[in-house]
Image (cartoon, rainbow, N blue to C red):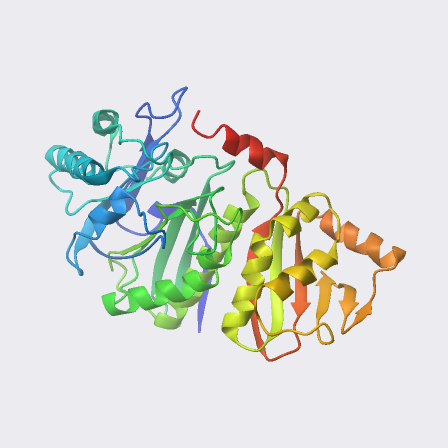
Amino acid sequence: MFSFFPIQGGVAAAEGFYCDGVNAGLKSQGALDVAFIYADSLCEVEGIFTENRFCAAPILHYKEYDKDFQTNFVLINSKNANALTGDEGIKNVKEVLGKLQEKFSEIKNPIMSSTGVIGVQLPKEKIIESFAKFDLGKKEDLCAAEAIMTTDRFSKRIAFEVVLEDKTSFKIGAMCKGAGMINPSLATMLCFITTDAKIPRSDMKEILQKAAKTTFNAISVDGDTSTNDTILLLSNGKSGAYDKEAFGFVLEKLMHKLATDIVRDGEGSTKLVAFEVRGAKTQEEAQKAAKALSQSLLVKTALFGCDPNWGRIASTIGASGIECDSKTLEIYFNEVCVYKQGTIYFDEENEKKAAEVLRQDSFRISCEIGKGEESFVAYGCDLGYEYVKINADYRS
């Protein structure tokens, strides 16, 4: 048995971790745009990255390190993705990190992560000049979380303390960013997780990938996959405490909160929607149908208009390629049944009830396939005018 509870501190909540955000002049009006995470001892590190074939220069640089390398520093910039920048992009990462290590000799094997506009070379001079503002002893988790934002409307950070049955404890904290280019293929986001749990390196990837499956790999805003998607898990082991079941459970809770925050913050979105598919023949088919619903433009626009157009739900499931039958299909908006096994329950009263569900800022659309026992929940949002406005003007 174990217990856990929320604490303050975000990505710097765990013992031995520090962070801050500064302005390097990448954003206008003095906004924070460069962040760092520093650990006062070397950390085991594991990462999951974008499935986009054109992954960004910072990811390519990360993959040049030895498989089991350790690090104590992550440098993050917003406004510039350093993606599709060729050999020069990787060279710029190395130059920036080299200058960082010249200034701070305690930094070992630093990692860089970037987010922003694709196809523009890194403004390395501005980033290097910002190092003069770094104080590695700070724990400014809000500043760090704000510095990595792009079109985000709010910062995303969280931390828990976990108390094990033997009364030992560890902490785990995180921050992430994301609001657009969000697709369930890791999702377009950056997420940085730190812990003082003494987690074996051999457990890190397994636990991280398992948690990602139902969190960051289960969300969609617009169906586009970025070049920079990154989840990093850093562990310094300082607490000396660890339990695999407890760590995995709390990590999933932490990542689920951040993932749904991303969808809630989707560019121009007004509502968070859980798309639940039950009774699918296989787990793969349940995921396929749920993710198809979370990505459908017709479904998203109906949600924006608070139109309970259940025909779009059914059509999307039928087009997803899974095994299904109209005689076993059931569709619900929260608890309001609109279609069940060939019978339409969409009279004036039920349509009104379903429309009321869609006016809420969060709700669930459930679909019973009736072909098996497998289920999956994907998360998405509506799509409205503001999304077009934001992305038509993104580079400015």
